[in-house]
Image 1 (tube, rainbow, N blue to C red):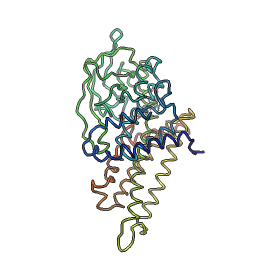
Image 2 (cartoon, rainbow, N blue to C red):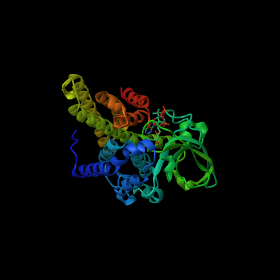
Image 3 (cartoon, rainbow, N blue to C red):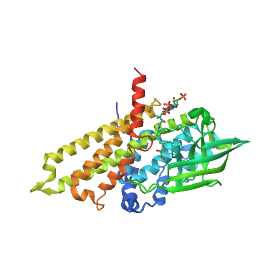
Image 4 (cartoon, protein in one colour):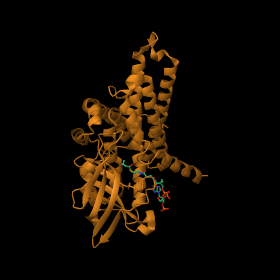
Length: 381
Ligand code: CAA
């Protein structure tokens, strides 16, 4: 397979890299410490066209491909994984779903402001009792006339506290389990919508995550995306695309930790020589480089299958599984290469380690990715 980048793909990668290094790098450590949501830089990401990269230009997006998307996520996450999270949720969990399943009217009304970065989106599937078992949702949407009345509680909503619109999944016929669910686009400014506690997180601390409750929240039926009964399949289809983005985020974090380790190994001395001259360090560097390259190839493979309109569920899971476990492994080794200073907040290496962990959990844990891959392998026998 040929993964040589086109001029357009190189241009978007360079744009994201330059913006991340110039505008995000100076604030990355501070917002990690304070947990402050980076409104200004997120607005600028929108102005640069990085919040709706794959959305057609007629709906305010960049009209680019999935490969361009992963390159941009990788560059931004290399500098700040919190920005990578905010970007990936808006791009793939929100805009991708609206573009794929929305009506023309829904695209004009919701997708255009979201893809152009004028509004911010979130995605809400998880509930306190259902994370991996996503079909087991208790949030109810009951049709009364041409209005849905929604009641329930959602958790772990990334960008929830700041979102204008949320892609919400709720049960319309709970007795039918996952086949009795529907997808909606929620306006967060309507009555009955209430933000719950904000999660105090280990990593990606500048991305805001919260609980949300719906109490007799009324939504016009025109906000339903797809048909009743299609909610779970829409959720899964969207997550397939999202997982490629999280894999690219993990790759960016791993690369940042790797590059810091190489630079430090060439500078730090012990026993009268640079630590890069010790085989113990060289082997860690070699393994880091190899795993990163393998993760990159899996990600590019999944993105290029998506661009060719082939089925990519299994490939997205493989990319996310391997890239997230690579990020965790590489960031842990990066602290080891740095020794004591790697454990200190004076360097960003400990932040990379904390940020890496979530990529093994959200948008499907590593165990769920293995389940998806195993089912695909066994079905094909
Ligand atoms: N695309 C389309 N349809 C799919 C699909 C996919 N990738 N995967 C499954 N389906 C369909 C199946 O074909 C099946 O259809 P039928 O009803 O016609 O038979 C239906 O969905 C049910 O499928 P399964 O029997 O496989 O369902 P399951 O209950 O065994 O669950 C699962 C499968 C893979 C475990 C799924 O529940 C899953 O992915 N869980 C993890 C959820 C997750 O990733 N949550 C993260 C939420 S977002 C987040 O992290 C927060 C954030 O803001 C970033």
